[in-house]
Length: 340
Ligand code: 2NL
Image (cartoon, rainbow, N blue to C red; front, side, top):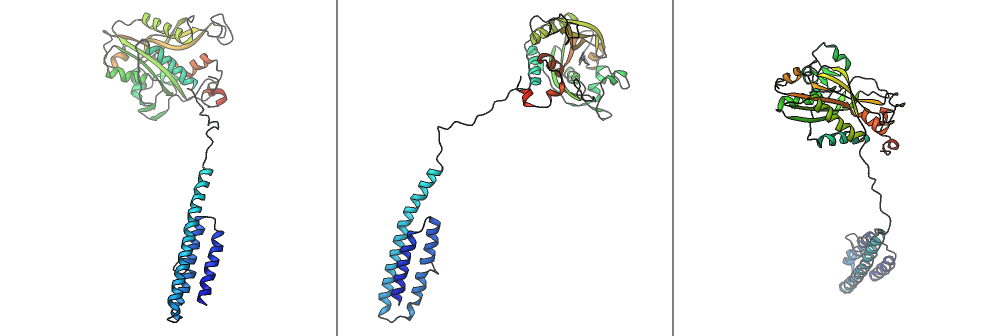
């Protein structure tokens, strides 16, 4: 009886092993046959009921069956291990001759281009870039620039107030005041940056826009220096043939003050739709720094003088690239941005 059971286990094992396909199945099989509760172990448990003569014979035979099955399992394990490794290699193979994924390369935004272009013109003339806070004290945004509280000039720059003393800066002049407070002349700086005004959005207005202001303070700085500087600037940005023209104006922080036009980049001065037949396009405000502003920064206006100017980066970009709606600069529509 016992021997028959062992033979059956051996026979079944041989048959089943042929059908095993992977290492997990093989291990399950090993446990099922040779494990603590396995078929062979169960048979050996029944050895107690055998006679003293039979026990060693059956015992030895059971050990032979166990060895036989263990050997078989060992051989199948080697085969399956090799098979699984071959499969893995086959499945993970990559075709190195396939075309690669394209890394799309972007480029600077047209507005950033214009700001960088302007910065570079002035860096070439020895200016430094200065930056400052966008959330600014009323003092630096208005007061120090000779625009006291209650002055009508404040109305022209509709302001976002954080509280009575703190505003979102409406111009980057505030940065220039901070530099003048902290540094002795000579000062030559360019202040690009984001500014805020409470304006409704339309084709030419946005409550958030970019300004570039410039400031020079030294002994003996004159209006001639301002004009010469802006000429170099206009030619660099809009082409050698570009000229500038100053029209008298009023700013609280400069005296005298001027609005500055450049030769129309479309008609080169002949007159066209873009310049409304003027031949000129206004792009800058400028002037000699008001003595009171210098005084506010502890710079003696009897010893030093300076000029300053400011321009809107969006307006300049719109001119340079012939863009007719400011909103296009903010919508991040790739069909638009890819054109520059
Ligand atoms: C514009 C053009 C301008 C300035 C900005 C300035 C800065 C200091 C002192 C004096 Cl610290 N002036 N900046 C001067 C003239 C024009 O910007 O259209 N602004 C409303």
